Image (tube, rainbow, N blue to C red; front, side, top):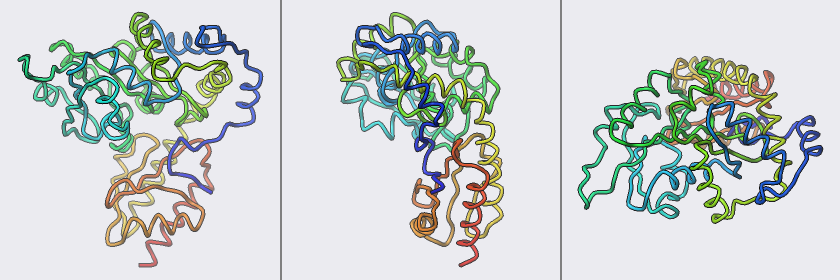
Length: 341
């Protein structure tokens, strides 16, 4: 199976498994797991932030960030395609009594002008604008990335109005590779930053919330309250550390394969995509004159997995366990489907 449904489908490599099996462990709720402690310090230092908290998922990391930055009745400004708004089961309302204010960005990215227009008055009957949340790279935006100037402008707009900036960095590693921005620079603009180890990096489990020591202490209590306290989590931290050390740089090849795939698909009849829109490992392409379900079914029956991403859209997501032969097979099958019209 050439699995392009997501970059979450990767399996631990033999070397990663060896590192997991040899990890030194302890009780992380007591802060006695040396592998977790090392990972938290390592990633916080990498991004130039004071502290980190290892958590089971990116959703938990994002929701912890919202909880420690807001009070009940506050509002979070976010692009209408953002993960916090679309894929976290309404958790901001359920867990933090906070509502989302979606704005119509472009390719998943928002601008200072959109932030300005969305900020509420400070009357007591209004929800209080408190946080701007951005996703870097974007998911529903097709893997696009914020450039440094764009993030700086968003940060300035937030600060001008006393708002905090949360960065959902589920695929921040892809964004860093694509833009050349240094991790510590990202940390300098974010009030809170969520980074994921189980997407393109290929660890089996885990994300991390980064912020100040005081905020992370508060988040640690919420993590326990929400059932996220882990015991001998060092085996998972070891996998995450291995992924950062050995899989991060290889994302360049994922991006190259994604762009090559987009160029080939753009040349086929019945499909539509601008190859220049592909910046990282995600490719969104539209189906013309046929049903998305028919395409997905044909691919699946012939050993290639992709997912529908809208009424006319398919997503293909590249990762380190899709090699060149797998790439060429996916292209060949789409071409066969196109020619069968």
